[in-house]
Figure 1: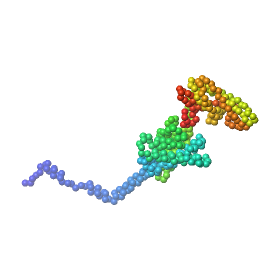
Figure 2: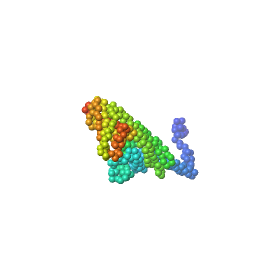
Figure 3: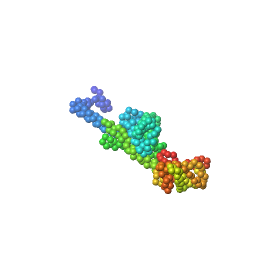
Amino acid sequence: MPDFLDRKSAKAANKKKKKPSVVWPRVWHAIRNPGFIWGSVAATLVTLAVVVFLGRGVTGTAGYAINQIELAIGQHNGTKLAYYADGAGIVSQVVNETTDWLVAHRGLGVVTGFDGVAEARGRRQKVQAAELAMEEQLNRAVSATLISHRSDSVGIADQVVRALTSLPPMTIVLGDDHLDVVSVGAPVARGDVAEIAVTLRYRELQVDLPVGIVMERQGRRWRAVAVSGLGDALNTVNTAQHERVAMDNRSIAERMAATVEVGAPTVDRTRRGAHHTTYLLRVPITNHSTDTVIGVMLALGTRSADASRAMPLEVHHPIAAGATSREVWQFDEPSSSHSAAATMLAHPDRLAVRVRDLVIDSAGRPDTMRAVTGAGASR
């Protein structure tokens, strides 16, 4: 008799039997179909086209250029940085605009002392020589900042601003004061030009200065090429500094007025022959303080004239506490001359005498009170 398997063994034998697959033959048949092949190729090409299109759309934006500039600075990649930012052009623009503003507002004397200025002839040539010297210094300073491998908790934007303000011409404007970056906006594009709003804060005066980074589309890339709003920012700085000077002078003037009192000036006029006139200017000075005044610098002018055009008068001897000293200055003038001194002294009723500097002996040590004459002046 045949051996019959028990139920358990029969099930195990059935499991060992392999049934032929019907799925893979169908898949293989579909893959070999020409329509499927051409469809797959077309889908791949479309996908690649979309990727390239989107990639060009992203890489062709001003925001992408800014990210690349930050990446280049972080990697100390000068080639990439030069591709996306015209650093030398920006430095040149900052120097040129700031120097022109300084010469217009504070005179040609602000550029004296730079290499090549003394040898240059003419106002424009002197300015250009100073600008060239300052550009070289600033380019070296900015380059050193960008390639520095030292760790610094200050952001790169603040580092660049710090480098730009550490040397002339910006040090002539700011002195020892500082600018901080408080905000950087997103690029706003208008055609082939984009601008990034940047807000700087004048740390000592707490004044905000809005400027912009100008970017231009050059082919397929965007490039930072200039700084906008620099003139308005300089005007804001100038106004804020003048307000600080006025406030400081008001406080110092109050201290000076409490220390010394300058009486009304009088003038005695004496003719010496036919060609000369002697003027004796008399000014009483009273020391109201409990200390000895050891030096006074006065400014002689008229009530309507600019204080910067006043004539300096000096007192070099001590004036004891509570005492009044009657100071006398003599001016010998040709009768035919029309000098500034003779013009003022000929009309004593228009004279105004102000205290500019005052030095007192405070417990054996000189204490100076000085009117502030400009930004960065000693106080």
